[in-house]
Length: 204
Image 1 (tube, rainbow, N blue to C red):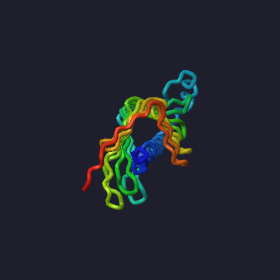
Image 2: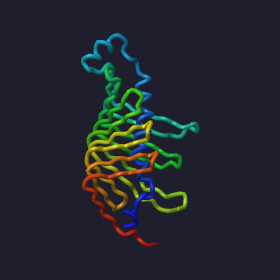
Image 3: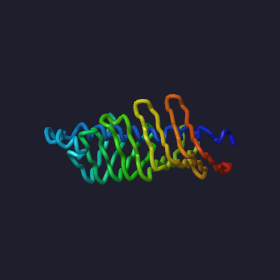
Image 4: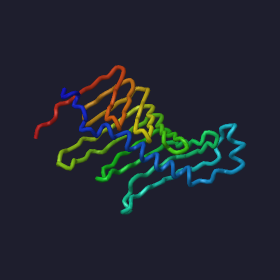
């Protein structure tokens, strides 16, 4: 099966990481731009209570030319001073690469640590890269990554899921009990009961 049609044009490997990087940038800005609450935060830390909320918010980042790079929206966000973490409910992330290609991620909740080096998407997590055309003119079908739990280590460029995952590229579909992706090593491992269904590529 052409090594399970691996690489999936290699873009499959970049899909979760692009969204985690976008979320990391935006949530880091959120944490650092909001007051810490001073002495009140010290008392609340022992009880694991939030020191501030944000409701129905949107954070956008732009490149040097003023083009939109990413947008993070949420129904509510809570900062916990004892763990210095940020929780975002009903998160929606939109990220554009240098070519302007859109990738969108949604989940019931996102959780980041203090410097956004670790980002978790929890609950019906879905990452969608819209269909594109490559620089050589080759059509790239839409690609979707689905799971209940996705953990990204931004600094080391690793993405993991210890729960069942579904990867779809056009009509092709792959499932596994867990996944580990190392971007630096360019290795994607799908573990457990790995299954794949490949459809013939339509001829011109």
